[in-house]
Image (cartoon, rainbow, N blue to C red):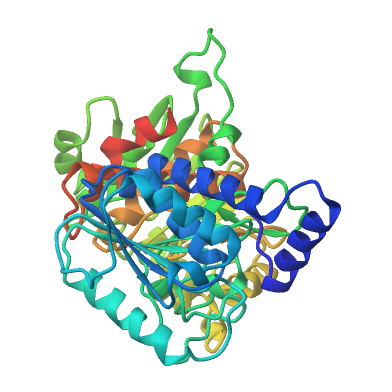
Length: 485
């Protein structure tokens, strides 16, 4: 999905209406239908036992999208609006009439399990602090969500109170679990700090609206999975991609295991795990039997021939002296995509390594600061773009809105959530990216698809587990084959 400011999408919509091809009411009907389709396809929304929909509505067309979506659920609806229904915009009144067949209440709702709370107060064109009428309803909405377990707040287009162009919040703002961006993602939704208001980004396409091309994009749909090459019927393991992994140390065998098993789950034909002799007995008995585990006395023994991707770093520990030099030599002997993660990144930062251009780096914010101390004061996107101009690699900067760039393209991942805030998720990601690269995806595409797939698999595990506070990284591995199918 493209990223554009509010003025761009507003001008494009007006041009569409001026052409006479589509009316505002017809476009709203199309948006409502796509919102409902998106809700049905999202694991974090479709699996919920919805008992009631609560709509917070303003006067404008944003309210119409919310009301139309509420009618699709076919369950009781509570409407909390800043005005009487007769004062809605004409298009919103039409959507309000769609509620005639459901149980409708105007009373202040009580907290309960299983609410879908829809923010349709203000659209992306609103700026400045909220008027008290709106601010009062925003406070009520947030309090209702906080007190209602297993519920979800869905913001239409942009959370009310968040400046869609800048990401600034002046006073009150809705804290959404999911935001459905209509037509395009507005830059303020991607600003540092906006994640806690925007939540999970869900792209709702508007193919009727002609928007200019843009070099940055949001990984919002499974469309990126089409980048995976189709396998010939005659395909066999040596043509399905071999991943060599250098990982694990005493006390950190789990990182190597998760990385290797994720590579296998993501479709690699062969996975070979190389580890030091002291950790070999542990890894050889605990990883999946399909994985080849090779002990090495020195990293100079790790081969690069025959592999289509190399992953270095998960649970590696802190190699020093000759072993650190052997790892650096290994990176430069490698002529295939190289995924550098975790302790591999820390070693590169500590020793100031230059890295091969086919490298894919997957740092979390702390590792990024060590790699690039000059990033202080930069936004996350500025940091990523600035780093790859100095070190021409593919960078995946982890976070609530993971950023992937090679300097030419910039992507923001939209999948995953706070239930992934635990150890092992990065090890799974590096193994998944390694498998995708081994199957023929170029470094940027392997990183984009890997981030999407791991976040989507985590969402599936989250729903299957009954919405726990956190899900295990190995639960993500279990869901990867289905996501990539």
